[in-house]
Image 1 (cartoon, helix red, strand yellow):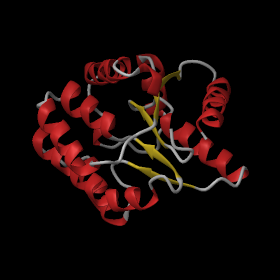
Image 2: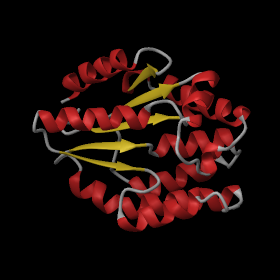
Image 3: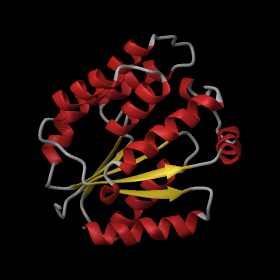
Image 4: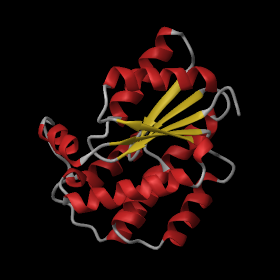
Length: 203
């Protein structure tokens, strides 16, 4: 594995992935280790514009349009990602597993189409390790209630999030050595320590 790995944080709403990626960024800053951090959708000027369209509460796209908008945002990010590939540590808040988990397992979009588009955009760019954050229904709802504002993807029925999380778990089981499950129902500081411990091995 490259000592400048690509590390992805995945998980449904309220799973703590954004918290943990920000804590990892602070840790790397403290260690003066070079990295870039982006999110999906978003991460670059044009991708952030697309993010606003996707997550707008008034948007009502069909599932195929949603997929293509997510892929369009990813396309805008690929030049940044490839420019820094193997030169800096790359931290990504959601990436290709999210597209499969949400669009295929959650919404039923054809998985072959999703994989074709992902492969077309990524080409030789690959992920080294994924932290999959999981959360139960009670904690997810509790954390969503604490948010100042909710976007379109924060307002699906619980059954949808359960299908998405199960989809994530299926993906993780296919390549266990490149995934670590973070149970965000447990103590956050404990999970933070687990992530830092693994990161120190990766870099």
